[in-house]
Image: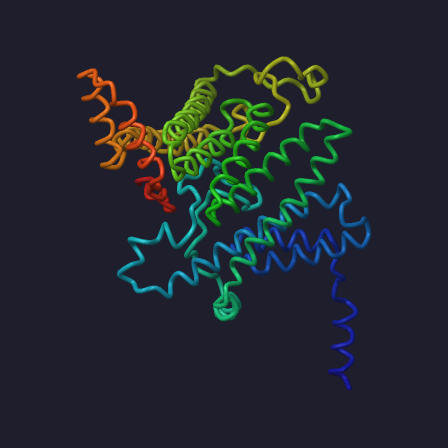
Length: 389
């Protein structure tokens, strides 16, 4: 009897799940890389919120975005679990092709909520027994191809977030909403990159980058990250090597701007911050130096040790980007990778033109048409380069 009363008392004292509590728990689960729990909790929060506000209410957009990110990370993690079933001898060689295409470099530093899209979360150790049980269940459930379903679900949810943000911007060009839309484009690009839909990834990354460049200062690490992600998918696309190199160089430029900003802060050469609200009314049209949106730590508010730590981190990142540019510039160009028939056709064309043979154009055209019909080798779907030390 007493035990029944205790159980009843516990049931009545257990707090009811609210949107706020579910979101808070989901953020914590995401930060701990417990993505299945995060997906479930964000789903619960969405169910509660959509009952109150409707499925396409403006206040649901942020939650759709977070839910989509959790679905994406869970799909990537499940792919990593399934990839471990392969023979060990192949794991080192094929890790990049069987796992995530995401950048190895981290441009975002320490994320406040653990929501850093560039951190490599694959093969992360699980923290407790519940996680080990969850991993076993997930492995069994996903053998029939559920990760692909999770990628599709992530895409659909992020598309819904995008449409709500775009609808909001039709009536109010709020810069915070624009930046959230940019983050959503980048996340959609991540989904397309993971599923090897490279053309779609290029379009979404470019859209996100365009917005971030407009809203954030050049020194923002988000801009460096967006350039780098776009360079990666361009490098995986045939004929886009030059564009890929350009975006890595832009990422490097952004990192150098941040380094200069940090060094100035360390030397005490940065101007003091304006009072809160001062100068905000006429931000538009005055350039990035007075940009309203800030997504990096404000240097004037950082301690000396914090500045020195970020300088050390970014100097390493800068070296990696410099090496990456040099590596990409040594890759064979389009001309160097042409097939033997194409090279033969060019050699014949040159020879006949030198001799001034009248019938040469017809012969060369025939050869060229044959060469054009040959398929180019498919671009590699794996990201081979990794940051050293």
